[in-house]
Image (tube, rainbow, N blue to C red; front, top):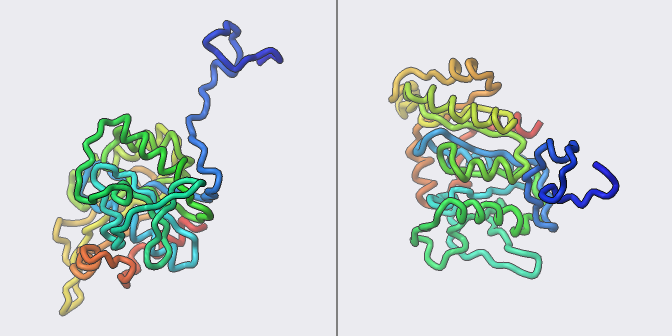
Length: 274
């Protein structure tokens, strides 16, 4: 690049390194935000428990004393506020939008916290949805955050791509269920992460088993688990399992997920904190 460079490649014919190397698409965080690590929670299909895993990881990190945040990037299907019992409207000041804090101090931002009626559907096209996700990063005053967990919609479409390109994602956690189809579904999420040069930190198998309340035996409702096999195939370093737990489901419905006593993701939280 010459000293007379105007940084406008459209009006320049010089074949310099700046033209050949694609620039970063990362969006700057709000100037009052200092987020140390961003962890995406993804899946190749819907209904496997991404939001549950996101919430449980945030709760586990908060219990360890970390400043924790959840960015709900599932614009058309937000469920994070319900799990934490958040039904207020986010406010703002001259610095930007202020996240809503849970009972235990987890900073949260979701489209439901910005709507007059949380039951109203979000009927937006992809570019508008992507813009909203970016604004959750650029316009929200997150302040000091050690770990931010991003709950993404299923699949490999607009929003995951926007998050991977616009936010400084340090790694992702893939969520799956035990069904045979999961091998193909996980592979899609892994390959997308590889395309974006983002490390896969762990595979979480949700609805992994049911534990009999009388004898304690674990029953594999959906058949034998293939989580370890799949993790080994794709080089995923950590596997965690969450059972089907009626008590946990009831707490989520009541907006009291922070009251759960399960430690299924505590080891994963410790790995992420390293």
